[in-house]
Amino acid sequence: MTRIQKDAPLYSRPQSYIPRIAAVHDLCGYGKCSLGVAIPVLSAAGCDVCPVPTGLFSAHTKFPVFYMHDTTEMLEPYLDAWKEEGVELDAVYSGFLGAPEQVGAIQRLYEEHPGALRIVDPVMGDGGEMYQTYTPELCSAMAELVNGADVLTPNLTEAAILTGIAYQGQDVDEVFVQRNIDALLDMGAHSVVLKGVVHEGESIVHNYLGFQGTAGLQEVSGEFLPYMLHGTGDLFASSLLAAIMCERTLVEALQFASDFVRDAMRITTTQPDFELRGVSFESQLSHVSALLTSV
Image (cartoon, rainbow, N blue to C red; front, side):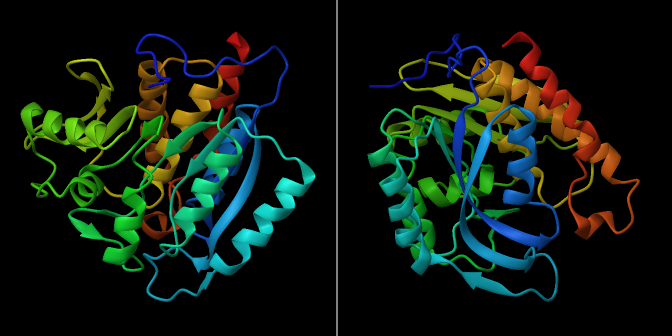
Protein backbone atom coordinates (compact mmCIF):
# COMPACT_ATOMS: atom_id res chain seq x y z
CA MET A 1 0.00 0.00 0.00
CA THR A 2 1.50 3.34 -1.01
CA ARG A 3 2.57 5.80 1.67
CA ILE A 4 2.56 8.70 -0.78
CA GLN A 5 -0.32 11.15 -0.80
CA LYS A 6 -0.36 13.42 -3.84
CA ASP A 7 -1.16 16.70 -2.06
CA ALA A 8 0.32 16.00 1.38
CA PRO A 9 3.89 16.19 2.69
CA LEU A 10 5.74 12.89 2.50
CA TYR A 11 7.37 13.45 5.88
CA SER A 12 6.03 14.93 9.11
CA ARG A 13 8.82 16.48 11.16
CA PRO A 14 8.38 17.07 14.89
CA GLN A 15 9.41 20.55 16.00
CA SER A 16 13.20 20.90 16.50
CA TYR A 17 13.73 17.24 15.53
CA ILE A 18 16.76 16.44 13.35
CA PRO A 19 15.92 13.56 10.97
CA ARG A 20 18.55 10.91 10.33
CA ILE A 21 19.18 9.82 6.73
CA ALA A 22 21.32 6.92 5.51
CA ALA A 23 22.97 8.16 2.30
CA VAL A 24 24.05 5.12 0.30
CA HIS A 25 26.34 6.68 -2.32
CA ASP A 26 29.96 6.73 -3.44
CA LEU A 27 32.50 9.29 -2.26
CA CYS A 28 34.68 11.22 -4.72
CA GLY A 29 37.80 13.02 -3.60
CA TYR A 30 37.54 15.53 -6.45
CA GLY A 31 34.61 16.53 -8.61
CA LYS A 32 31.38 17.36 -6.84
CA CYS A 33 28.86 14.54 -6.83
CA SER A 34 27.32 11.79 -4.68
CA LEU A 35 28.17 12.10 -0.97
CA GLY A 36 30.06 15.32 -1.68
CA VAL A 37 26.68 16.80 -2.65
CA ALA A 38 24.28 14.87 -0.42
CA ILE A 39 26.01 15.61 2.88
CA PRO A 40 26.12 19.44 2.64
CA VAL A 41 22.71 19.82 1.01
CA LEU A 42 20.84 17.61 3.47
CA SER A 43 22.80 19.02 6.42
CA ALA A 44 21.68 22.50 5.37
CA ALA A 45 18.10 21.19 5.63
CA GLY A 46 18.74 20.27 9.25
CA CYS A 47 19.25 16.55 8.66
CA ASP A 48 21.79 14.17 10.17
CA VAL A 49 23.41 12.50 7.16
CA CYS A 50 24.88 9.04 7.83
CA PRO A 51 27.02 7.94 4.87
CA VAL A 52 27.12 4.36 3.63
CA PRO A 53 29.94 4.55 1.04
CA THR A 54 29.40 2.28 -1.97
CA GLY A 55 32.76 3.15 -3.50
CA LEU A 56 35.72 5.47 -3.02
CA PHE A 57 36.92 7.42 -6.05
CA SER A 58 39.89 9.72 -6.47
CA ALA A 59 37.70 11.73 -8.86
CA HIS A 60 34.43 11.20 -10.68
CA THR A 61 34.32 9.03 -13.78
CA LYS A 62 34.29 11.88 -16.30
CA PHE A 63 37.98 12.44 -15.55
CA PRO A 64 40.30 10.56 -17.91
CA VAL A 65 42.16 9.07 -14.93
CA PHE A 66 40.56 7.95 -11.69
CA TYR A 67 41.05 5.36 -8.97
CA MET A 68 38.10 3.35 -7.62
CA HIS A 69 37.98 1.26 -4.46
CA ASP A 70 35.04 -1.15 -4.19
CA THR A 71 33.61 -1.09 -0.65
CA THR A 72 31.24 -4.07 -1.03
CA GLU A 73 33.08 -6.31 1.44
CA MET A 74 32.89 -3.74 4.25
CA LEU A 75 29.17 -3.02 4.01
CA GLU A 76 27.89 -5.98 6.04
CA PRO A 77 30.16 -5.40 9.07
CA TYR A 78 29.55 -1.66 8.70
CA LEU A 79 25.79 -2.19 9.01
CA ASP A 80 26.29 -4.84 11.71
CA ALA A 81 27.89 -2.12 13.83
CA TRP A 82 24.98 0.23 13.17
CA LYS A 83 22.54 -2.47 14.25
CA GLU A 84 24.50 -3.16 17.43
CA GLU A 85 24.52 0.54 18.25
CA GLY A 86 20.76 0.80 17.66
CA VAL A 87 20.99 3.42 14.91
CA GLU A 88 17.53 4.66 13.88
CA LEU A 89 16.73 6.10 10.45
CA ASP A 90 14.02 8.36 9.05
CA ALA A 91 15.01 7.86 5.40
CA VAL A 92 17.23 5.70 3.21
CA TYR A 93 18.56 7.59 0.18
CA SER A 94 20.47 5.53 -2.38
CA GLY A 95 22.35 6.51 -5.52
CA PHE A 96 25.46 5.21 -7.29
CA LEU A 97 26.34 1.59 -6.58
CA GLY A 98 29.63 -0.18 -7.19
CA ALA A 99 28.50 -3.80 -7.43
CA PRO A 100 25.26 -5.83 -7.71
CA GLU A 101 25.75 -7.20 -4.19
CA GLN A 102 25.37 -3.70 -2.74
CA VAL A 103 21.64 -3.81 -3.44
CA GLY A 104 21.43 -6.29 -0.58
CA ALA A 105 22.82 -3.71 1.84
CA ILE A 106 20.07 -1.28 0.87
CA GLN A 107 17.42 -3.97 1.20
CA ARG A 108 18.81 -4.78 4.63
CA LEU A 109 18.35 -1.15 5.67
CA TYR A 110 14.77 -1.31 4.42
CA GLU A 111 14.12 -4.44 6.47
CA GLU A 112 15.70 -3.07 9.65
CA HIS A 113 14.04 0.38 9.29
CA PRO A 114 10.58 -0.35 7.82
CA GLY A 115 9.22 3.11 8.64
CA ALA A 116 12.00 4.99 6.84
CA LEU A 117 11.27 6.78 3.56
CA ARG A 118 12.88 5.08 0.57
CA ILE A 119 14.38 7.54 -1.92
CA VAL A 120 15.98 5.80 -4.90
CA ASP A 121 18.05 7.74 -7.41
CA PRO A 122 18.94 4.96 -9.90
CA VAL A 123 22.25 6.42 -11.03
CA MET A 124 23.20 4.33 -14.07
CA GLY A 125 23.71 6.54 -17.11
CA ASP A 126 22.80 9.55 -19.22
CA GLY A 127 22.45 10.49 -22.86
CA GLY A 128 21.41 6.98 -23.81
CA GLU A 129 24.61 5.39 -22.40
CA MET A 130 25.40 3.49 -19.20
CA TYR A 131 28.22 4.85 -17.03
CA GLN A 132 31.48 3.03 -17.66
CA THR A 133 31.63 1.35 -14.24
CA TYR A 134 28.17 -0.21 -14.71
CA THR A 135 27.40 -3.68 -16.04
CA PRO A 136 24.13 -5.30 -17.15
CA GLU A 137 24.23 -7.33 -13.91
CA LEU A 138 24.48 -4.20 -11.79
CA CYS A 139 21.66 -2.51 -13.71
CA SER A 140 19.48 -5.60 -13.25
CA ALA A 141 20.18 -5.55 -9.51
CA MET A 142 19.39 -1.83 -9.36
CA ALA A 143 15.95 -2.59 -10.81
CA GLU A 144 15.13 -4.54 -7.64
CA LEU A 145 15.06 -1.24 -5.74
CA VAL A 146 12.16 0.09 -7.82
CA ASN A 147 9.67 -2.09 -5.95
CA GLY A 148 8.75 -0.22 -2.78
CA ALA A 149 10.58 3.01 -3.60
CA ASP A 150 8.63 5.91 -2.12
CA VAL A 151 10.28 8.26 -4.60
CA LEU A 152 12.15 7.08 -7.71
CA THR A 153 14.09 9.72 -9.69
CA PRO A 154 15.36 8.37 -13.03
CA ASN A 155 16.38 10.35 -16.07
CA LEU A 156 15.23 9.12 -19.48
CA THR A 157 18.28 6.87 -19.93
CA GLU A 158 17.80 5.24 -16.54
CA ALA A 159 14.09 4.77 -17.16
CA ALA A 160 14.96 2.94 -20.39
CA ILE A 161 17.41 0.66 -18.57
CA LEU A 162 14.92 -0.13 -15.81
CA THR A 163 11.85 -0.69 -17.99
CA GLY A 164 13.34 -2.06 -21.20
CA ILE A 165 11.49 0.63 -23.17
CA ALA A 166 13.85 1.85 -25.88
CA TYR A 167 15.57 5.19 -25.26
CA GLN A 168 14.35 7.83 -27.72
CA GLY A 169 16.42 10.84 -26.70
CA GLN A 170 15.27 13.82 -24.66
CA ASP A 171 12.68 15.16 -27.10
CA VAL A 172 9.75 12.86 -26.29
CA ASP A 173 6.02 13.48 -25.94
CA GLU A 174 3.82 13.02 -22.88
CA VAL A 175 2.47 9.72 -24.19
CA PHE A 176 6.01 8.31 -24.06
CA VAL A 177 6.58 9.84 -20.62
CA GLN A 178 3.33 8.34 -19.33
CA ARG A 179 4.30 4.93 -20.71
CA ASN A 180 7.63 5.01 -18.86
CA ILE A 181 6.15 6.25 -15.59
CA ASP A 182 3.33 3.70 -15.74
CA ALA A 183 5.88 0.92 -16.29
CA LEU A 184 7.89 2.04 -13.25
CA LEU A 185 4.76 2.31 -11.11
CA ASP A 186 3.78 -1.18 -12.26
CA MET A 187 7.21 -2.35 -11.06
CA GLY A 188 6.24 -1.17 -7.57
CA ALA A 189 7.41 2.43 -7.21
CA HIS A 190 5.04 4.57 -5.13
CA SER A 191 5.92 7.74 -7.03
CA VAL A 192 8.19 8.52 -9.97
CA VAL A 193 9.96 11.74 -10.95
CA LEU A 194 11.07 11.42 -14.58
CA LYS A 195 13.65 14.10 -15.37
CA GLY A 196 15.03 15.87 -18.37
CA VAL A 197 12.55 16.10 -21.26
CA VAL A 198 13.72 18.83 -23.64
CA HIS A 199 11.94 19.59 -26.94
CA GLU A 200 13.98 20.74 -29.90
CA GLY A 201 13.93 24.49 -30.31
CA GLU A 202 12.77 25.12 -26.73
CA SER A 203 14.72 26.53 -23.79
CA ILE A 204 12.61 24.61 -21.26
CA VAL A 205 13.32 21.39 -19.38
CA HIS A 206 10.25 19.37 -18.40
CA ASN A 207 10.15 17.09 -15.34
CA TYR A 208 7.16 14.83 -14.77
CA LEU A 209 5.66 13.29 -11.66
CA GLY A 210 3.39 10.26 -11.40
CA PHE A 211 1.80 8.60 -8.36
CA GLN A 212 0.72 5.06 -7.67
CA GLY A 213 -3.07 4.84 -7.87
CA THR A 214 -3.49 8.32 -9.41
CA ALA A 215 -4.16 8.85 -13.10
CA GLY A 216 -2.30 11.45 -15.13
CA LEU A 217 0.94 13.36 -14.74
CA GLN A 218 2.04 16.54 -13.04
CA GLU A 219 4.65 18.65 -14.76
CA VAL A 220 7.19 21.05 -13.31
CA SER A 221 9.14 22.98 -15.93
CA GLY A 222 12.10 25.29 -15.74
CA GLU A 223 14.73 27.01 -17.82
CA PHE A 224 16.95 24.68 -19.85
CA LEU A 225 20.62 25.65 -19.75
CA PRO A 226 22.43 24.40 -22.86
CA TYR A 227 25.45 22.76 -21.21
CA MET A 228 26.08 19.59 -19.25
CA LEU A 229 27.61 19.53 -15.76
CA HIS A 230 28.67 16.58 -13.66
CA GLY A 231 26.75 16.11 -10.42
CA THR A 232 23.49 17.83 -11.36
CA GLY A 233 21.53 14.59 -10.94
CA ASP A 234 22.90 14.11 -7.44
CA LEU A 235 22.14 17.74 -6.63
CA PHE A 236 18.60 17.38 -7.97
CA ALA A 237 17.82 14.28 -5.89
CA SER A 238 19.51 15.67 -2.76
CA SER A 239 17.68 19.01 -2.91
CA LEU A 240 14.42 17.19 -3.66
CA LEU A 241 14.90 15.10 -0.51
CA ALA A 242 15.92 18.18 1.48
CA ALA A 243 12.56 19.78 0.66
CA ILE A 244 10.72 16.54 1.45
CA MET A 245 12.35 16.35 4.88
CA CYS A 246 11.23 19.96 5.45
CA GLU A 247 7.59 18.88 5.02
CA ARG A 248 7.07 19.94 1.42
CA THR A 249 4.74 18.03 -0.88
CA LEU A 250 6.42 16.15 -3.70
CA VAL A 251 5.25 18.75 -6.24
CA GLU A 252 6.70 21.54 -4.09
CA ALA A 253 9.92 19.59 -3.60
CA LEU A 254 10.21 19.01 -7.34
CA GLN A 255 9.84 22.73 -8.02
CA PHE A 256 12.45 23.57 -5.37
CA ALA A 257 14.93 21.06 -6.78
CA SER A 258 14.43 22.28 -10.34
CA ASP A 259 15.04 25.91 -9.35
CA PHE A 260 17.96 25.08 -7.06
CA VAL A 261 19.83 23.08 -9.72
CA ARG A 262 19.22 25.80 -12.34
CA ASP A 263 20.65 28.51 -10.07
CA ALA A 264 23.66 26.37 -9.16
CA MET A 265 24.36 25.66 -12.82
CA ARG A 266 24.41 29.37 -13.60
CA ILE A 267 26.98 30.00 -10.87
CA THR A 268 29.09 27.05 -11.98
CA THR A 269 30.03 28.62 -15.32
CA THR A 270 31.92 31.39 -13.48
CA GLN A 271 34.32 28.84 -11.94
CA PRO A 272 37.59 27.60 -13.49
CA ASP A 273 37.46 24.18 -15.19
CA PHE A 274 33.73 24.06 -14.51
CA GLU A 275 33.08 21.38 -17.15
CA LEU A 276 34.89 18.77 -15.02
CA ARG A 277 34.90 20.37 -11.61
CA GLY A 278 31.20 19.70 -11.03
CA VAL A 279 28.16 21.77 -10.17
CA SER A 280 28.87 24.69 -7.78
CA PHE A 281 26.03 24.82 -5.27
CA GLU A 282 27.83 25.99 -2.13
CA SER A 283 26.84 29.66 -2.25
CA GLN A 284 23.19 28.64 -2.66
CA LEU A 285 22.90 26.51 0.49
CA SER A 286 21.13 29.34 2.31
CA HIS A 287 18.11 28.57 0.09
CA VAL A 288 18.08 25.04 1.48
CA SER A 289 18.33 26.30 5.06
CA ALA A 290 15.44 28.65 4.36
CA LEU A 291 13.21 25.59 3.95
CA LEU A 292 13.44 25.17 7.72
CA THR A 293 11.72 28.46 8.50
CA SER A 294 8.26 26.99 7.96
CA VAL A 295 8.92 23.65 9.67
